[in-house]
Image 1 (tube, rainbow, N blue to C red):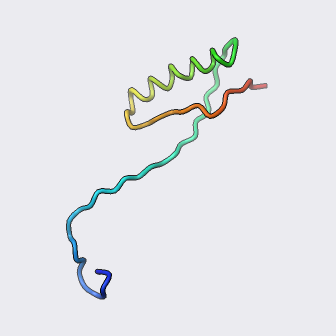
Image 2 (cartoon, rainbow, N blue to C red):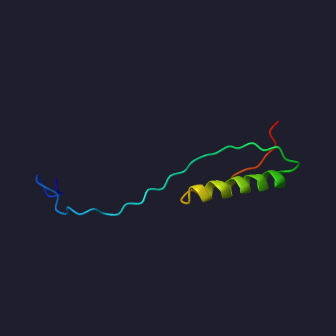
Image 3 (cartoon, rainbow, N blue to C red):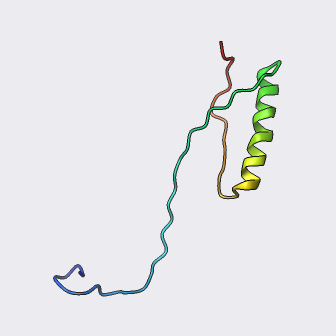
Length: 66
């Protein structure tokens, strides 16, 4: 159906679409400091991003798990 009424579509070619999505991840590490835990996460992040090139992991918060 086209936008002017009943009938087939006016343009029958494929068009490009971009889909963006967000994903939350929580990972626990044994570390002596927040900086060391962040370094461990960066190593994990590099491994994940090497395996899945379109995925980007970004740290939102680092805190001690009580």
